[in-house]
View 1 (cartoon, rainbow, N blue to C red):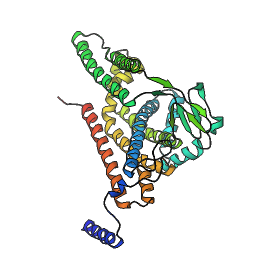
View 2 (cartoon, rainbow, N blue to C red):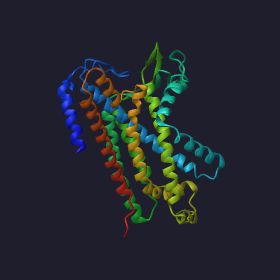
View 3 (tube, rainbow, N blue to C red):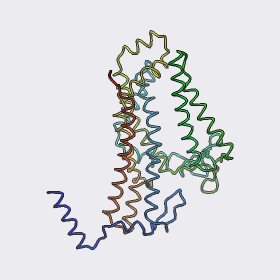
View 4 (spheres, rainbow, N blue to C red):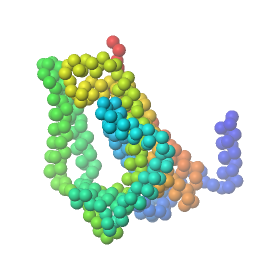
Length: 354
């Protein structure tokens, strides 16, 4: 009843103010540019939303990858017997996870990137490979089709999975040590190397050119600040999940590994972590969803993701309700897709009782 009443008020107010409620605004010129890209202001609003979606997905994918790696390492470090390592890891977790994320993003942008990093004329250039300044980070990149290289990488993953399955079956049948991981790495590296040589890819290095950089891949300052803040914040939560999951693994598993004379690294990598991630996956999946949705805070530091695009579009005269409804639907679709992927891996890792 409340929803019906609110919707009735909305319809009445729309008719009274003659505000359009359809999505025809998507064909209008965007009338703004997106820094760091070749986006033209005469392009339609729909193209701006597509670029905003791409930027959001870039933050989500890169953030999830690095948050998982950093969070896992910090979570393991919290259980270290080394006092210094354990203390530093604990301090990292307790400080970062108790800070407001919006404040952390703003601090990273204003205090670190824009104030700590040098001006472009005094840019840091470590090993002549990177260019670091308050105009962003430029790093070496390749010249050629990224889509084709991505397809080659995907093909190498498929082939490596097949070879790993065959190699593990052989090891189980013969009792010999499995070299599935080594074979997988060699296949992936071999595919990329052969594709690189056959398609004549090459590297391009960045260098300072006037008030900017030329060559390589340029990372916008707002993107760099957003990624670093999201990774720091999310990994502090992932670290606690990993720590708790490791402690939830029965201590007899570790004792059995010690009885087999496995090294501490082997015990953690082969015995403890695989079982810990069975427990941790649902909670870590929630952190992935939070990171994806928290990327919308990039609008506060002028990173052109979906929310920023919607705000600028509405500010230029587009109807607010359809614009933000579209934005909500896109975020909902991203979150549901992420949930499906996480649930797939969760089912794969689930312990099957016999």
